[in-house]
Length: 42
Image (spheres, rainbow, N blue to C red):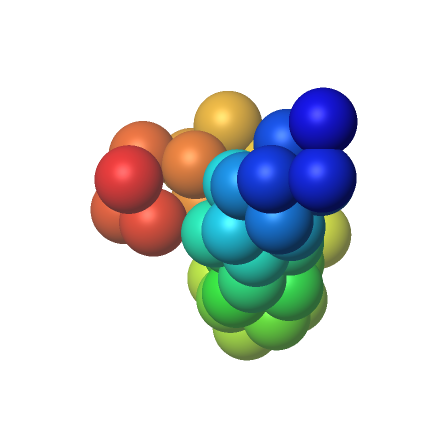
């Protein structure tokens, strides 16, 4: 179980860095276009 937490941190790293990236671009692209930001970000 000691190794489980170590892997959990790595899995949380990618998703945690992804939200901030699209959120910043969403402000530049348009706050009213959340779906449009997800397309270019993807």
